[in-house]
Picture 1 (cartoon, rainbow, N blue to C red):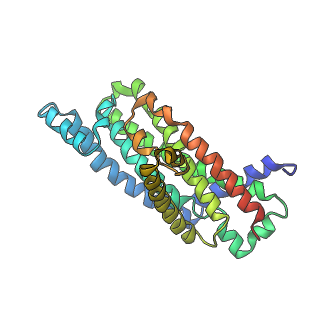
Picture 2: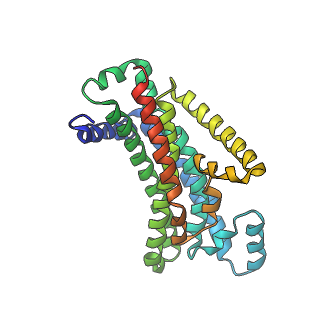
Picture 3: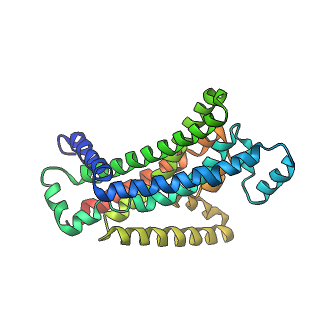
Length: 273
């Protein structure tokens, strides 16, 4: 690593944040996300949480949630967080593919990346962009979690102390869940020419890799170990957990992210600028 690697990494991460929160395109994306999330918060999330709180025909509703695979919502002490947990796992992992698609590909295609690495290193650019995108996603996750907390306190302010624990656990787990997806997009962005190509390739690779590995694992169970290579393969199991139990699978996204970042760094080091 060149001297000043961490200073360059911080500067590049700061630029990524500035690009997302101060430019017209970035602000438009944030406003769109905020509007969509408000609709989700006010309607499906709030309504399902109220449904869980109703005492009338409670067992019938519980059986319905078990039938659709959302029975684990009942395990959460605060139903709003149980519903938020299921919504957020799906929303943020899929959103990560688009948010993190353009880490280095556009700058390389325009030729600006060549000038950036003159005063910095490829490693600081690669990891700086990755860190910046992760901070952006962490802020979005925290904002949606806090809005859910506000919904909880509006219903019952006495739940504040217990809600903080759920808030912390869910936020940490969601950040871990998007980590390998962001690392996968960092590796793809270092190889392809545009954010659109990175998004398409991510969907294709993720879909076919999941199908191929699942097929091989079905006939040869010993190969099921390779499921660890698929970002998000643990999400279905993660959704069935609640509270501190959700951290039992924290090692999976961390290991996937390490492998994907190592692959992305290797690609970045050998890619023509």
